Image 1 (cartoon, rainbow, N blue to C red):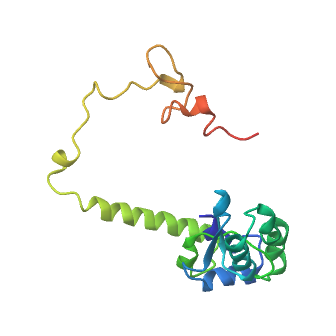
Image 2: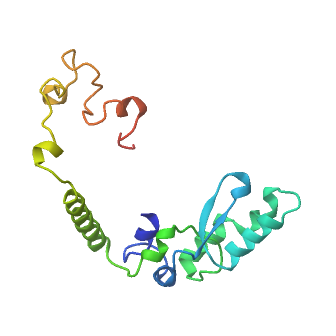
Image 3: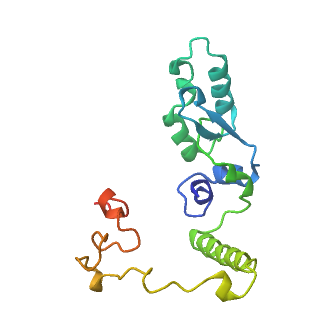
Length: 178
C-alpha cells in the first residue's frame, strides 16, 4: 500500500517520481542487502543496480562495500528533486499495477469498491443451501460480551475493552500512539 499511496495527488513527493511509478512494470525493482538478511526492494534505477552489483561482487562481504549506494540521504533527495536516478528509494512489486495518480479520497473509495466486488464474487462461489454453507452457531459457542465494554468475571478470557482481539491490549496492539 505504501507504493500505491506514494502515487497519489497528496503524496509529498516530486511529480516525476509519481510518473516513474506509473510507467514502471512489476519487474522494475531490485532486491538489495540480501547477503545481510536485511532485504529491501528498491525501484530499479542506476544506483540500485550499482548496489546490487557491488553486493554480488564484494570480495569481503562487508556492508561498507554497498553502503555508499544505499544511503537514505540520497534517496530522500529523489523525492524532493525528482531525479529518479539520484539515489535509491523503496518500491513494492505493486508498482506494475499502478496506472494513475488519483487523490487519496478517490483511491480509498476505489479500494473499498474493489474489496466489496471481490467479496461478492467470492461469496458466489459457495454452493449448497445457505444453512449448509454457514451453520448458525449454537448459543454455547458464542462468548458473552461484556456490557458497556467492561470486562469482568462473567467474561473469562476478556482483557480490557478490546472484545475483537482480547489479547491485543496485553501486547499493546491497537493502542493509540501518544
